[in-house]
Image (cartoon, rainbow, N blue to C red; front, top):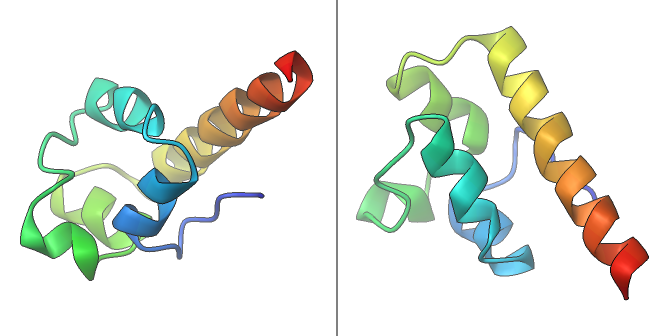
Length: 73
């Protein structure tokens, strides 16, 4: 499954909870708050002052992580 910036935070974490490590590493520490159930990754990044280009890099990092996980299986 590919992650996109228009996916809801909780849906992204449902794909693999370890993605939380990537998000918190980028300064997004309220992944399990009520807003995470309704905010897209892009919206949450905007709230945390993360720019559009940085969001794209984060999405790429998450998808690379998921690709690495698939290769290990």
